[in-house]
Length: 179
Image 1 (tube, rainbow, N blue to C red):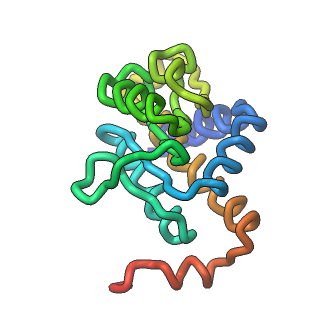
Image 2 (cartoon, rainbow, N blue to C red; image 1 turned 90 degrees about the vertical axis):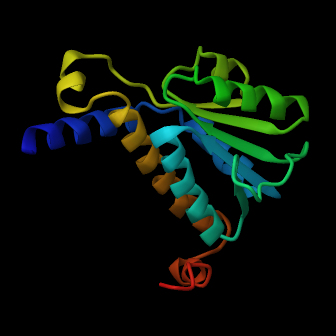
């Protein structure tokens, strides 16, 4: 287990260190300044997006996961965050195109900034991944992307907490009632 663990952690750290700081600042500003935030992703990328949605709710934001039965209509002043490793997932690209037409801001989290999703986005948070054969052995499919996206989102939380004058106690007050 140590070899795959070291590989995954090293790849994640390298990808996070290569991310564009100005894009990260833009994403944080967009999140803090939004009245409603929508998050979308498919499969494991969707699960990572849902985990971030939970944190944003705990931060007091009005957050919806696209596709849930109670998700309202996206308006022009809203923010939509779409998570897709390849940036070519058809439903992710369609979602970006639809919400851009209504004037919403789209932030994509992807490893492929030149993808269809990247072209349909206002802001791209590129998770730069290295393509190598070890990945197939130790981290198949989108493992590095998904794990890195989760850590990225969790790393944004303390910055958002600081910018919105919150602390762990304020998040705890919005935590699930059964905990």
